[in-house]
Length: 344
Image (cartoon, rainbow, N blue to C red):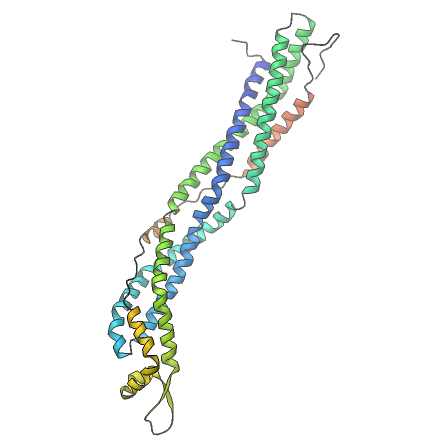
């Protein structure tokens, strides 16, 4: 085994740099490639919050309008089971909506921060590629010169050249060590962050099914709500004469309460809507499985986003020093005739 001269130590250290840079580049690329899908999953918190907001409004309006149309004799009995189902779902959905709003408030700033990472990730990926190729190229050249020097016959050139190599290695070693340390630190940070993101992605993935279930309820409810709105407008817009001692008009809604003898005549213009409503009341609202998960997700911990700019800066500073020293390396071997080893 060769003695661990400064030159050998330098070669050993620089030999680690291309692999460290390539490993970091791969992990950065994996993070970048998966980031869009992770951000999409994090967007489910907004989808669920918005969908539940819409559903609460729809259920509330449906419940109110069911109470309105219940004054129609042939509708009143049919309305009650549907209203009970709507009110029961509303009681379940309202607190879930509040939880979803809180969850979205937590996740939104984190999601928006992730959306801004692409430029610095691209910069780091490019830098790692440059570091890997530069380090490998110089390692090959430096090792070749070192092997050449060591194979020379003993003499002034060999002594001076080995001194040059040792002096150069001792000067550059701290920058290579710092570069390798920075690459390892960045790689550890990226690996930890990526694992935390995947854990978060897995935790939030079930929200997609909740959003689908909410949308299924809306799809079932919307035709009924549309009919209720239409019938409600009809009830309050159709006017009939009354048997009061002076000419006046009242809404059809009030007529159902106080003027039963006039109902049959007043119902003729809206009987088609009433028949359609009676058909629409034969609905079964789908359930929304998983709403309880919204409360559990409020306890999730969002990972800290690494300071990518600082990680990159810690890498680039020693690398720039290394580049400057590479540019100074001028030892030639085998030596041309009359060659003198340069001074550093």
